[in-house]
Length: 247
Length: 247
Image (tube, rainbow over all chains, first blue to last red; front, side, top):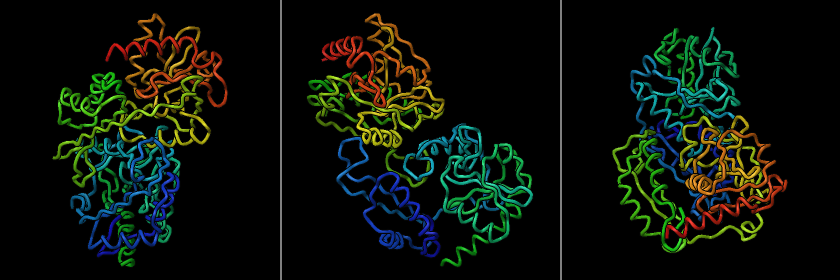
């Protein structure tokens, strides 16, 4: 999560997703949403990057989801270190990973600590001078970034993979879809071939720290509409207004 | 790993696999194989179940595989709690999970802490009164058990999925393949449809704690040759001799 001036942005949305995933993973959260929100706000001073982790608690020695101990909740906050200014100004270079998202996996839609594949994809991207890796799913459709969601613009309309492409439905992705609606920009969620991404006028990534991050190039091929393009810039402004409204 | 009378069985093989996976995951092991072997032997009293875990060490705050800190090595040992005697005597009931192994995943061949899918598959199996879950791969071929390898017997010959089916090549699986060779039992490694498993004369699972675990039934359908069947029993005896030889 991300705080602005000590206020955690979209905290309720993050905690609702946490509760849903905890339930799926049979973790009984030992705190209410209100208690968790209070605790998060307590550590979220200034402009912070915040991580809330729930573990299954004390290990009982058996490989089971059931345990007699309550889960452990850890909240960490640290000052935001923004991405390079150059990325904000003229876009982030990204590349398509050889690693695929398994859209049939029961955990692909949940934010868990099983993200070793994302770490490997990011390491591969960094070696190629890129800020993020894009992952296709096993069927070859666009899924998401290793640590972000991907959206793009074609003829003034926004496209993004639907959840069944095999992705974590990011809180910022959800907000941007709502902002498109408010801005009267049509949004298409669906299954898209990688080629459609390369033919886009604008491409951007979302997560709580990237916010909306313009993409400059994919595998070295420049995005034709520039970075940030006009639709991305308009959505960045709408996002800024949402942040201001929340403070 | 498993110790017998204070001696860790197949320790060298386990440590070699660890080193290979650490290298793949860019973990620089801060100890030599000899040092690790000494440390493991130090805690492996009696008949123990031993777990050696390597973490990336102190977290630097960035989602990167690179770190300035050395990895942390944790060795845990506890007395073996065997599987129910009934399983040893007349076989373990298992079921086929709805969760699939992604044979294209770069981490499926490595023993990592990213095993949440295996935990979910085991929980599902336990709810169905089964001791283990079998997983097919995304193409529908047999892969492995959630925490074991699977082998079966057809007309006196042993079959088991090849590594490209999407599985962790278990140390006990490797030993059993060698034992088959010594016993002049032919072994077929390959891609097998789930149906072939159901038509087997005998089925058994392997891992360090199961050793060779006969399977009684799959999804409620009894294995025709009984559990343990004659070939399984012969291999269990050969395995016992290997254990004795190592002490």
